[in-house]
Image 1: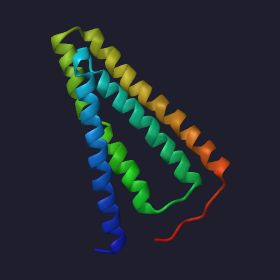
Image 2: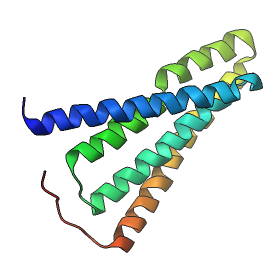
Image 3: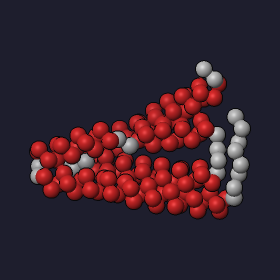
Length: 137
């Protein structure tokens, strides 16, 4: 494989290890709440960060390994669709249906809003710093 592909794979591996570790720690800290607050924070925060990075990287074109390491790796490892689905089913079966619906609406709607806000902030920060062209590997 090409050297740049290996850089991408290594960056994703490192980013995902960091993101997954942060997600695990946050879940441990919020476990006692009885409500999946940790997953909400992870998914909303991860959406905001990924939106920011997307907006920023559009203005500040950067190395591919950095984009995939932070986006696919860190944000992908930090956020979790499978836990959202599992928590939704748990709330529906073990508590009440409306807690599950509120959880889903806050997670999905809030995630989209956070991604949008992050994207707008990323663009503003990128423009404020001035445009930098593509950096070669």
